[in-house]
Image (cartoon, rainbow, N blue to C red):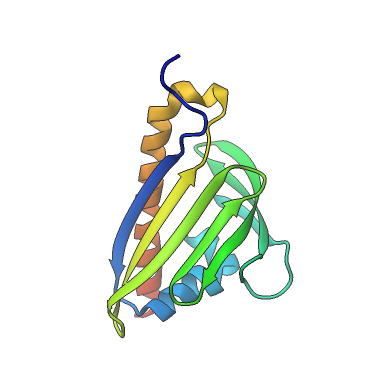
Length: 157
């Protein structure tokens, strides 16, 4: 009726340069995800791996978040794990995707991190708020990359 489609994803994408090699940035974001995710995303109040061993493709996690006063719980799975290059998560219990991609112009010193968050569909009750949700998602991706940059660079100093 209003041109809204519950299957049209809401996408936010941000990128930033980090004064650290891709290997170190990936170690922070990917290999040490369970330890560090709550640091760059303070909305995460509880995070646990549901899979034994190190983070890898297939790792399952459960998180509890409080976003703007609203508590949510979700289970997600690592769908792509390419050391030094990329880690991607997809919601199992909720339709979302988080994708962190690393590239380098100067392999020994500077990384370029690109973060994309996709809310893969909107529930009917959320559709009237789609524009606000898109703004919040974009602001969230910008905050995420800034937090990662700050944390990684402060660890290296």
